[in-house]
Length: 199
Image (cartoon, rainbow, N blue to C red):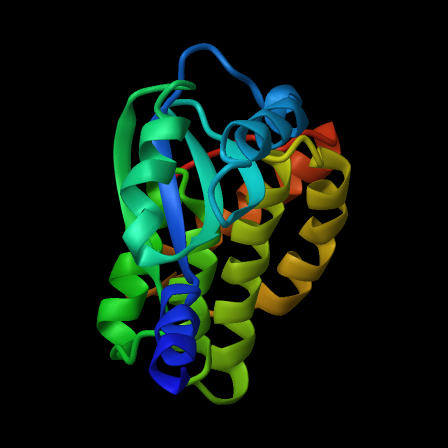
């Protein structure tokens, strides 16, 4: 009896994944529909579809599922669009340089939530002014992640905090052009529109 109970417990272990599907003409306005539709088509699987974010080239589903059921979830979600990639999400121990590189890669590929996660790993290793600067970039990534869920107003509201955190930091941070980010944030504040750009 005890062994059977342990087996049931181990089978119910949920892991977190970002599942990206190719975008077939959806916009952030479809985010609510997509998350509800994904929950419905995955309802027979013990899985949790947290959120759907819509980028220009892909749809991002934040999913918790037992690794044994991941392929089934992907099969169900693939009725919405073809699979682009799936990534297991867990806290990685990574150096500042690699974390920054990953954060920039994800940001420039509109994977803003993942950019935020990578840069948060960098942020945890920083002190003083550098910590503030990295937090400013993280806040910008989070603003864009909100826009992908049709929450542009929330994202626009975060711009001032991002700008304050960037402060008068040096013009570059590694390969990141901080001056360009500051200027882009100011432009978006004037237009009150979030305009995606690369860093």
